[in-house]
Length: 112
Image 1: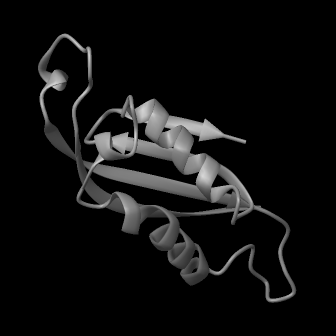
Image 2 (image 1 turned 45 degrees about the vertical axis):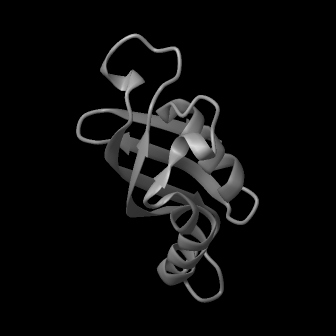
């Protein structure tokens, strides 16, 4: 069974060696969808929604919210950011997928 939760954070970045508007520093409101997958536990839950929030806030949101992504990534594309988020969360959660929206209408998904 899968359960998920949605998170939001704001961050800035620029794309080095990119020709176009994104070569300049700009910001986005990112939407992050985190999905975990496991069997039901004795408590009737896959994972408590509050525990999911606690882990994602601690591991991802506190680090990236209102940050300059270029301080963390050489190439802060949505693909690289989503891949990093997945690699960090899979260490702590029975992760199925993450979907990172860069504003409206643009997203990247990383699945197990």
